[in-house]
Amino acid sequence: MSATHREIQELLGAFALDAVDPTEAVVIEAHLATCPRCRHEVREHREVASLLAYAGTSAPDGMWDRLAATLEGAPPAAAAPALMLGRRQTASAAYGPRRRGASIVKIVATAALVAGLGAGGLQVQRTLRSQDDQINKMLATDASRARLLAETAAAALADGARQVHLVTPDRQPIADAVIRANGEGYLLDKGAPTLPEDRTYQLWAVTGGQKLSLGIPGRDIDVLAFRVPEDTDALAITVEQAPGAVTPQNQAVGFGLVQR
Amino acid sequence: MNPTLPAAPSRVPDVIRPPSRQRKNEHMPNAILREMGDAALVVAIGRWRQDALAEAFRRHAGAVHALARRVLYEDAAAEEVVQEIFLRLWNSPDRFDPDRGSLRSFLLAQSHGRAVDILRSDISRKRREEKDARGTAEAGYDIEHEVWDLAVADHVKEAVSGLPVDERRAIELAYFGGHSYREVAELLGAPEGTVKSRIRSGLRRMRGSLAAAGIGAP
Picture 1 (cartoon, chains in turn yellow, orange):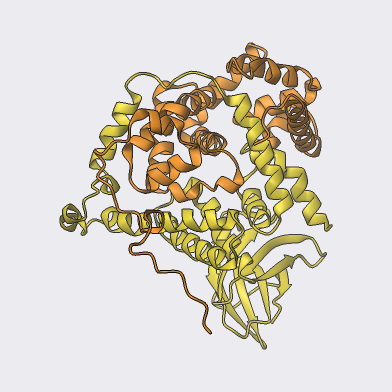
Picture 2 (spheres, rainbow over the protein chains, first blue to last red):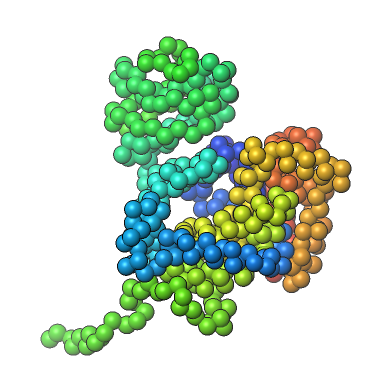
């Protein structure tokens, strides 16, 4: 069991109560995607929390009526396909039917998974979840952005993507990255300090002797989506003068090899 | 010498026909809905059955509202959370994975997460500070007072009262106070690592007590 696994295990209780930082939540959710034991533990913690929360009372009068009134106007509730034609121009109407179709398949896929019916269902579930994530990412508020990215990262992990641990020159972790087979990647903060206002972190792909800028996270690394060239040997992070540099002007503060 | 094949069915059995999208104003009898398990309800919601959503609301909205209100201390904000959580269930029922726990636990986790997001937003910072001041003045939160379910209340209270005070306090501040474990550590003057461990061990201890009483094990 690695130290990282133990560190994450220690955080599972706080995670289940939404008491971790967003960057920690990203790392934990990525881990949960690959660790059934930790998933089981989080599930147990949440069941306990739900017992603490249960008030045994009904929702206040009128609340359902107000919710139902919003459903009347929402695209998914306009169920008859013929009526939908006039609404397809709106973004939400366009997403409604597609997502609903996916929903049913996913529930079936989940049921198949529960019944142990094989990897086909799992693949369907992952693909659909990934599609949903792309939509959700566009619609997401800042508050839920990190979690949605984590789900994308999780899907990437499940599909055999590569992980890169970036460390400082004295071998301290500074960020983790996950790179999908198609070159899409996500950089996740791992304790990088906040920089002064006139400085920024910058992520680079090292290919041969060349360094190619992949993105500029800002004063904090937080979460960054990027895309790497196929022949990337390593990822590097430098601290540059804001708003960033065309070529690295400083020594790397973080470095990690990319497995081919 | 081919074996005789059984006759092909003359029509596709109902159970494997693709689900037809039903009009939202078609309602199942309440008695049937009320007997359906949560997972079946969510499948019905996936088929745009508003009456199934109404039944899920009847079962769980009270708890979702109570938790949001407990974290946010505000009726209007709590109702917004309830609306958002059930709209989310309506629009994306697939996000509920029955393999990862009960529907109630799922909805409460969503409600808690959303309430905490609101609490941590800039808009709510002032309110939280006021609440913190009040919480300190009133000697804090008491989870025993949050447990109302008559069927399980005694066992849950017993499990809570069986916790070491440090563990109980850390869970109260994190769950009902909406604080991160780092904030809890600061509030309690304890190391962050210790607070992480207290939250986890407290939850596990309660899980053990409740499981021994036959509660909480799905």
